[in-house]
Figure 1 (cartoon, helix red, strand yellow):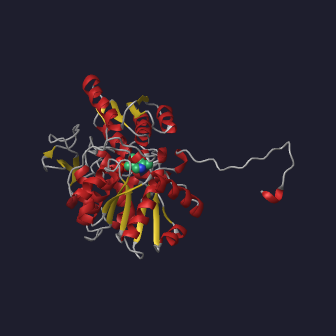
Figure 2 (cartoon, rainbow, N blue to C red; figure 1 turned 180 degrees about the vertical axis):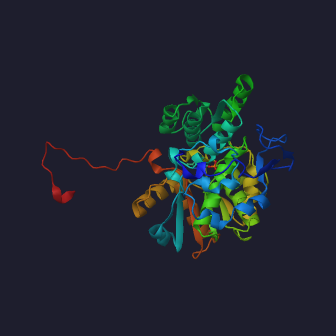
Length: 415
Ligand SMILES: *Cc1c(COP(=O)(O)O)cnc(C)c1O
């Protein structure tokens, strides 16, 4: 018996992938074979026969399915149920932040807490899909550059799939990430460079050793996994999307994926043409998308000397830059950068005000929402959804403990 009820229940043919398509040129590629980037060097997008899917899949079909990401199986790429590797990708909760909302002046401030997923981050959504597809396509070895969480999820799901994983991290990647990658069965290397330089190692190793390159957006299926954030939140909001979404943006997979999800849901008739304003949140020390947004460019230049404590968004160059920028612009949102000080302050305040420990990237979305409100880009009555992408427990915390000396007298009144 399959531990996850959603997995076993779909006959083989209940998936509807028709083909893949270059996100820049629209050139068509065949499904069911191994792909990296398109010939134009850009991400491939998975396309579905949504008319056929719509005949067997409607909002009512979801009612009785277990609450994990496989409930959207008809809109996911894995053909054969026995290729689905899973560690329990449960629906993540949307948590109201009433106290923080009051302080910054919005009536409805909410956070989708992705820290509850396997390996403690939303990278699980993308990587469970990428590795399930790698298994389906017969791939034996994968390699990827990572700032931490992606490598951890890749390691876990690769081990689960019986696939070898080789992972390269910048040497200032959070220690816990480097160690959990190895603990979950991958070979991990610290590199004295940034994530794109780790990516160059993967590309060279792929040529030399035949590794499959799992870098962000360089294979087609991570977007499909991240797309489930959009499907899930649409369903959680009862098919009436929030007014604004603040998404901490590194490679942008999640923002691109959610935008794709909304389009597919509209084509299926689950939602109308309304869209949330999408805010791509970056850090002052690494804000290539913000710079391109402000300059009116469709592509972003590499950000030199990238630095921020929010390692998940320390991505100097994103291969899907134009997909992020197109979505943000089409939505009427913005790309915004916040300082590390604002990030630290936001994590600290939300932890104390709400009892919810955010990761730094999640803290960045709080700071960005505050700034957007001040700038008039969102309104006090808007329903604002933030993303907390990883559990705050993975990050160093300041020590604010007091000390008790059992050898001395204890002044209980002062405790
Ligand atoms: C990867 C990551 C991000 C950025 O996500 P993308 O979809 O790649 O832009 C943000 N926060 C955390 C914690 C991450 O691990």
